[in-house]
Length: 304
Image (tube, rainbow, N blue to C red):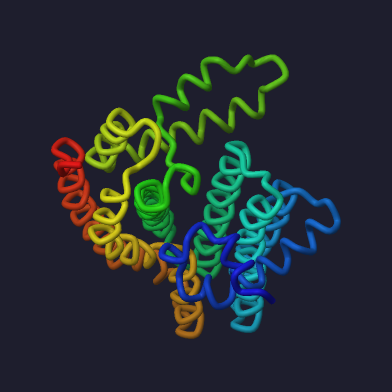
């Protein structure tokens, strides 16, 4: 397998985790090639990944270690397909807003299913029904953590790799697109755009400093991000992006593996609302510092 060809389907190497670079991206690229040969589109791959993800969540329900480990294997297949859909889109030049929206919706559904199955496992096994409150707090925490990590990664791609390599959307722009899209013949597409737009809006609210930086760059550099800003943002934000990587799916799967071995799957909820939220707080503080420094540079650029 030609590594340079594989890397051509990365978003960029700097935002990829170790497991992504050395496993998921390689497997995903092989799958993307096979899907391309059979004229299977990215949306179908996304939905197939969702089916595997939901199946993994169901296997987490049963209090048998062998079944739970099988669930982790199925979850790994779901993650490989989740990588493959984006790689297939880049390989076949089929990147689209609708594809990103579908990917986000499916990911949320998969993890919601996992939380529900872990909660039902606890309750059916005779545990306290208070676990539903714990699960709710964990789901809210998970959503905030994933949104922050994704927004920081999108910003990094936008500022360091340029607009052509980034999916750094603005809620205001999406609102205009939503308003211009008719309901007739576009009901599902418009509903998905609405939920995606709300997600971007929440990201901008959570990291308003980064949203302001984005707006300032769009005004100051309407054609492309200048090289001096790309280089400076890279040095400022790379550590933040790496920290945010701890909030992605790979870390959670490792945590689930050890918690299943320990026989304490609901410990995952405690991890979400404690340790992972500490990482989230660190990411938010550091990203604010990066955004404020970069905004100062945009407002007072170095002499040409």
